[in-house]
Amino acid sequence: MLASEITAIVEESSRKLLQISIPQVRFYLLTDVMAMDERNPLVRRTLDECRNSPIRLRLLKTLREDGTWPISKERRLAEERGAGPPVGWTYTTMLRNLYDLGDYRTTIDEGNVRATFEKIFSWQTDEGYIPGPSSPYYPDTHYNGYALRMMVRFGLKDDPRVRKLARWLMKMQRPDGGWVIPYLQDLKYFPPYRSMSMPDFIAHIRKLGMDNYDPADYYKAPSCIWTTMMIVRGFIQDFDMAVIPGVRKGAEYFLDRFFMKNYYSSFYRSDDNWTKLKYPTYFGSGMCALDMLTWMGYGAADPRLDKPIKWLLSKRMQDGLWCQSDRPHPVRDQEISQVCISILNRYAQSLRGEPFGMAGEMKLGRKVPV
Image (cartoon, rainbow, N blue to C red):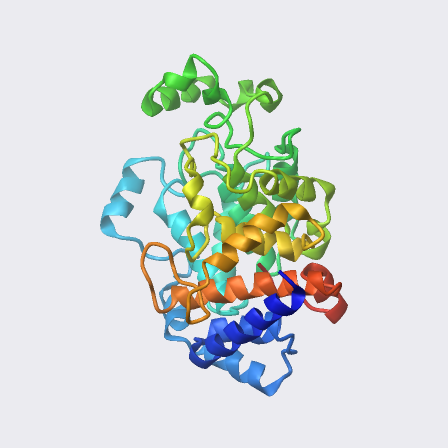
């Protein structure tokens, strides 16, 4: 499509969404798409509305002094019967609630938010990763990318513990540019482990132990698309980290495999996950991938984006907006529409030869996280 056609779509969809948008959606429309400064009165008023959101206030009110949120009795008992946090729902809930608080423009020094990060850091191993939440026997690499995203987004990039986590993640990158969940997505790829049941396999790696594990022994196994996507997303929250060569190599890994089936049944094997519109995008999707890629500077000059952009345009409804694939949802549909508009806005900028994504934000002297 021509730049003028996509620009017209962006303008029409933005106008319609702005009329009905909730504060956090309106904020990103105003700043990311319309390029308004945070000193603009409308943006300031929108930020005030974000701060007064009942959802944000409830999350801050229920956040305990130890940095955790309450979880259901059933999940708490399951944790107590097992390894305990960070394995289980306590840690998962912390990351998900931080994700939501970030969307509402919450800062680290509000309420007990800093205590949440201190709790996460208290679980950090000598190697640098955060254990859990799935198992105490191997690190969930994708959740470490998730944790990195939240740490950087809340201003902790220069904390030595964050740098330690980032170094561990880069150390775990594989020659093909991607990442895997250790053991689960490399050792189990090969016979005789491939046909082994998960309980038997977990029992096996429990005996094996991390001391005997060398990732280089399993480089013949392919990387995981979605694990890679979550780790790259963690790094691109910061300008300096986003330009690390290994981070771009990771983005190339999932860009080259757009719409392809993942190799591992443990994590979104079906290619349907690419084309499902959903929010929050904890574990990635085609929409999430395009958001990241256009932010990093992939645009109309790269023919690999042609088909994904056409797909995104095909999902636009008659009212000019987008909706969740599983079922329409009045709030999530707005979040999805805002992300889609931002993607198309960057792509149109690339067609016009303008700075877009991270380059555009650097030119303006600010950053809007993805």
